[in-house]
Image (cartoon, rainbow, N blue to C red; front, side, top):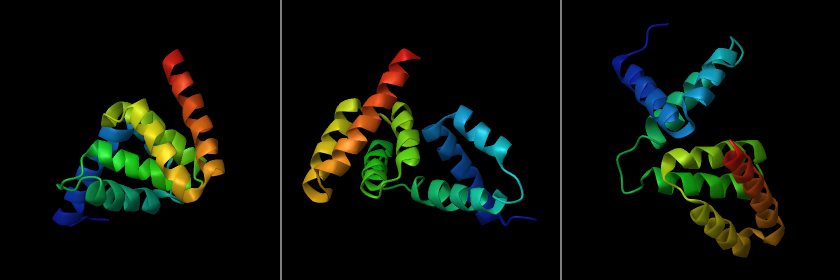
Length: 132
């Protein structure tokens, strides 16, 4: 398949941003594991999520986008994606304090059980990261 210049630039921009946020190890593993079943999906998220939304030039920086993403993932119960984005905070200038405050803040809107669950997940991931 030949990509147009616009799509190609979104794909390239998306891959660059994806690597910047998630890290080369994670992205390389995802690329290595993709096959014909998820190849189109991987291209879609690289172009649309990473190449368009995360790469936008706006008043939101990577830290802001990271906190928004973590809040949405927590409130919608996506534990694995939340874990991945907690690890990515190392690359987005998002501090543990930022994440802690966000989880405390969302408790008022989605409930204490949700925040409590994701505080435990974040704490576990941060502890593992500190050991590495």
